[in-house]
Length: 334
View 1 (tube, rainbow, N blue to C red):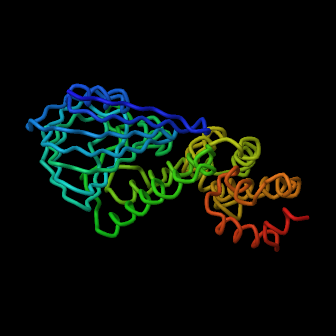
View 2: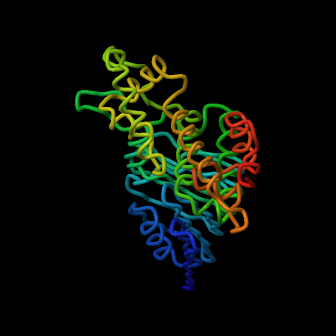
View 3: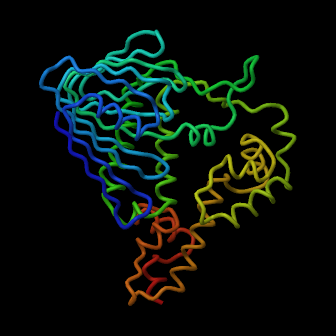
């Protein structure tokens, strides 16, 4: 058995990277337990098994890069995270709680398991990237789900694979953006608003790509609660918490209404959505920071934009110009 581990934490408090190279399946299983919070038993069908596992914790989500030169079997309890995988090489078979076996090959993206269900897996000489979001973050962001006789049910998917190739391509683009662009930029990766937005971008892409049971139709009471008072409470909360990584669910809770009621209140009484209002407030705060900043101290447009949750400088500049009539660099240079 040979095992090496390394861990590092960059200047940002939000990232933590752990790496393991091992030929011991028990060590690999414990590594997966430690980083995903789910009991996993790993067994190898190969005498020359070797695994290299990298896990990067970005707070709102985590990224994995796994290379497994072996035929491996996994038996796992219900996951504590929603895990999306992109298979770059090899073959994978997945079965959730005695259901149908699903098979994946190079280029496929898939969900590792159904939420709240145990699963078994067979992996053949794989190279795979994963992005995982904690189940509590998923539940908070998703909001209301259909109810059964026991109350609100769990989020479920009808398949572990995307509904279409176009959907799969969209998930791949999001994975590439997060792993290759966002986390590769130390300035962006140090900003909690950027990381939180990335987690919600990933979750939105998954819910759009993989058929699921998220409730999308409003209830009759939603319209009744969509008042100007609701809007006032929501805007006040946004103004007070724009620097925090808040969600639509947080805003709705602060206004004491459902997310659907919140959406309807903004539709009736405001020119934009709750998230549009949040973006506008953050843009305004970025404007004030640019006015107050001194470029000679090293402050840049990109750093101010990232601080307020805008990871793409070009997109930030375009939005800023639309609202203020000048480029953000011109404001910084005043």
